Image (cartoon, rainbow, N blue to C red; front, side, top):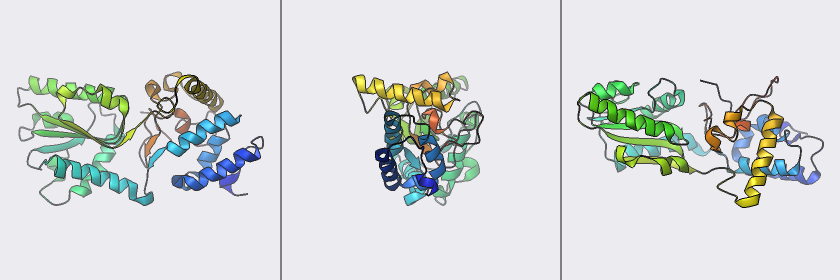
Length: 284
């Protein structure tokens, strides 16, 4: 039996066939065969298995399959230059960070640079690594904040306020602020302070993996099964149950740190074990 098909002995033949079907339908599983198999082996009931199966099926993994990574970055570049009409003369594409903690945003900034080759765009001028330097740059009129993912929207609104406050303090012309994400949860859209931003662009709108799919008793039961899985996992901090602020996200951009908004069974290390989760997250 192959690595992809080894499952816990208590799983019924019916579940076994469903698992094989899952491996055939979700193309990225071939990149994470052992990790997904280990995750499924946490399940002690068909109900738990169904929760994991549905989340894996809906999981948005932006990887090299079908050129998803480059296509996402290209769409962001086209939004900036073709749709918003921003130019290198007065535009700065910068990390969504004011505390030097957002490594994924910094990585995204580096990844997207090659898509701006030509047309007058310059790495040192148009891609500063500090937001504070843009405030001091009198030639800058437009800021584009870039990141792989936005969950609750809290950090985005915090940065928008910071930009406004610092601009006032420095007595400079108001900056026109834009934001670009590959994945963006509905909470970000709903909570956005539209008075402080010109526009928000995202390649994929992300929904809660359980709560946006189910209602009432069915939703309560699915959440219960997930919490049982978190307990079986053995290393899920209470503050991250269902993802940070109960975000219930199912998103990852390959080669980047998994957002803490994702269900932690997908990213948290297993306690006292060398088993690895499908989308590991290194703590900040």
